[in-house]
Length: 356
Image (cartoon, rainbow, N blue to C red; front, top):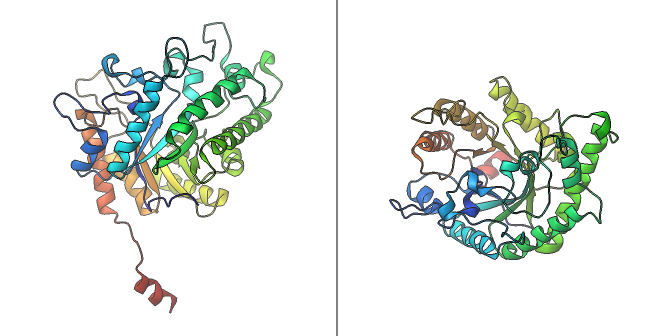
């Protein structure tokens, strides 16, 4: 059996952390990401990093450690940095959710790791989105993309397989979309979803061959209208990570968090569900204070508080690094929600009394 997850997972999406050679430390504050959150008494116990992504979207060039070298081979310095990240996290009792692949890196060239060897064609008038997704997330055994994917899984898996604090995520927000024009059919949307599900099953199987079968695994999918159900019912996981569109619709968060909890329980009774606000409208960088569109302090208190009230986890998608001044309201809100919704852990005496 894998290690026991905390009763309440409280996470921080820090996609670029694995590419930061200082792990969030700055000249004015030498504390790394984990030291800072711990010493400031924020309740986070989980960080999510994304491997196949462009860390330059969050990390400045002077501290950027690329996943791939210019010759398109996997960068050993990145693997060492990732290993150090896991060790520093463990010192402060953080789990690390290592997300291997990233839908948005196939959708958008700006999200893909520089110098990656996959040869994805993003050019206007070139390969359409749906074909790019089909080509990358292919279940075909001998495909060159699958070979490169296995190389990455092997390198990352071998570096982390002895770490005691790793949760594996197969892919971030994985789904099959893009126009279904005649040139892209067949297969149909249903067949695309099944092929993608097969790819996830194969990816998990290969990961387990590399790191062992006693691991925690999750994946984030599209919405219920896209591929949530087929993914959750057919890809073996140990908990669920539902993103914003899966638990918040038209601002009716209480009803939809409850509905998300019910769906998760139907997919796999006993699985922990984490409500992840990735997908809420991002920070407005055009304002002097980087005003948030949806992740306001009030909204975050309500969203996280409702999740905690219902016995669920919560993951924050703020900007990286955590100590940026326009993140402080978000971290205060998560702390407030955690402290005002204490985690109930029954004592042996209370359980005996209830049973009697």
